[in-house]
Image (spheres, rainbow, N blue to C red):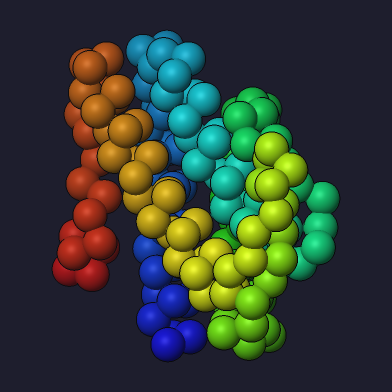
Length: 146
């Protein structure tokens, strides 16, 4: 199971970077919503990693300097892989959401949610790119594996 989860984070890392690159290449055409969504996508993975590791969390909708996004994505990837390799993925962890409500999930569930969440928002970003006259990226997992 750990190998498959690592593969999914490699996929997530790869296409997050591709989306950041596409936005960068078309920065004068993208709208604020696109910038907000790529930041939120990266922030969410950082938040889920931080919940597992007990680290300080980003704001879910904070806007980071654009030039930092590639490094944030890379650090997210490294931390997710480190969690997979060092933690029992069945271990349940208690955390609080941004509203202060307490929840408990397995580390696997938390990490899988981060992957799924990224995929969802990359789809939204692709729709926005298309609306702004930018060719959307093929970010489906199957394209990554081809």
